[in-house]
Length: 212
Image 1 (cartoon, rainbow, N blue to C red):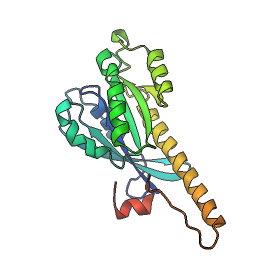
Image 2: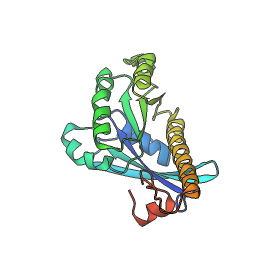
Image 3: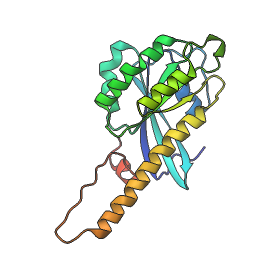
């Protein structure tokens, strides 16, 4: 694990999906390598951080676990603001949680930045004997909606690292490419012209002066 006190980029990530699909355990598995069998439903919002290395740069993720219960949706809506990535989680053994993915995706796109990177996550892949959501069906849904897709298990840790690393790397590559394009534009700017930089994703200096 990379030291999180110094970083080059700070990205806010949100975990969304129905209650009890394993969002909190995905968060604790990635940030602390812990799994709590007695994990209770999140009340409101909690978050944790972890830094990883991408292309020699330290990328710090601030991961917010939004409550899945309906009665907290009004509270959590504000926390989509500033998020540049999202893990949309369902339980592979509970088909209803997969059906509700479409509603969560709409809410995310209504409240979050239009450029947010979204990964569909089928959690609890250790429950293969109870599978209620075919992998291919979820893959097709993800492809149709422009999402990446992965199946994970917070219990046995399978693909948890891969899910977060893939999402953070995708965000980093978009940000670094934008920074390069903006630099090129600035080099070519003519007297009297101006350019606008949209602060969709904050770099280290911007984030420290005012966190997302």
